[in-house]
Length: 319
Image (cartoon, rainbow, N blue to C red; front, side, top):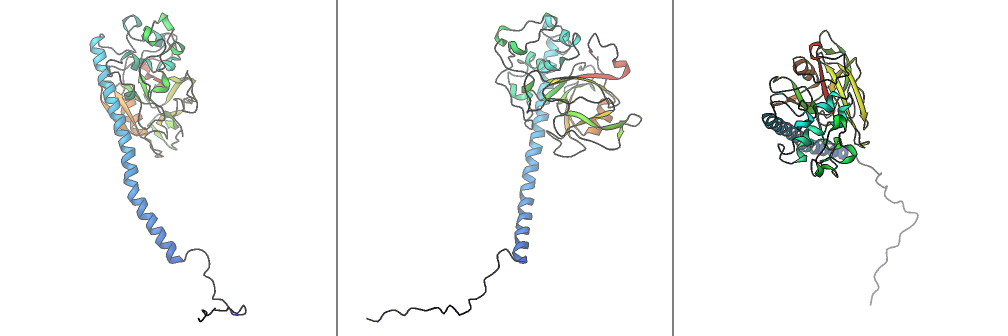
């Protein structure tokens, strides 16, 4: 039986040159084209997801606006922020404190029935905050101003500012349709504003949630009590905690980079008006269209002798 022939390599024989590691120019171009096609395919999906979050947020604000109207119809045509504690509101809490931002959650808790007992509606889908399972606030954060008493079923609750995405305009009402009743919580410093024309020559943008608290420090109390001028400037703010940033007096009111702005320095956010309608707006249109013509009842703290609606000031509380 013949044995198979073994091929013997001569070590002195030159081996064919190895192909160098890496891709050729043609292969690199092909990969770049494929990546460009992939990005083009995915971009609309990301855009739709972002837009879906903002649309859901607008729907939340519309539902909150409806809840306010229902509550007002049953409570003397005024909001919980203007009704006395004895009649189920929180007006005394606001009057007796310039740091009521730690109770920014309370209007929603007082309107639990009108909101359909759904705490999810007060959290924006684009926010890092999570909704609570109910509207009950606990002993650790129950309001004690002006002798406020709270329901027994709220004694062991946990609903507070960390479960809310929207600020409250405490002096707004449906009799002033252009008053600002609420909006996305991420308002902050937007650059030095020229009050003569309302322009900001060099726009800035807070990278976080502006005057509101951050998810990195959500411990109670958080939130802020702030006053803005209808010329678009921050005037005064008392930040209670939670990582918020003070609105500087020379700075313009503007949407921060979080939630709906998506890196656009022009800003993007949503506001709720006194008539219950929700509006989408940039930072500039918020200042020039909505703040400039906003009028409300003020509802400032009684020890605040500086700010009045006649001087063009509006009070917001931020969660």
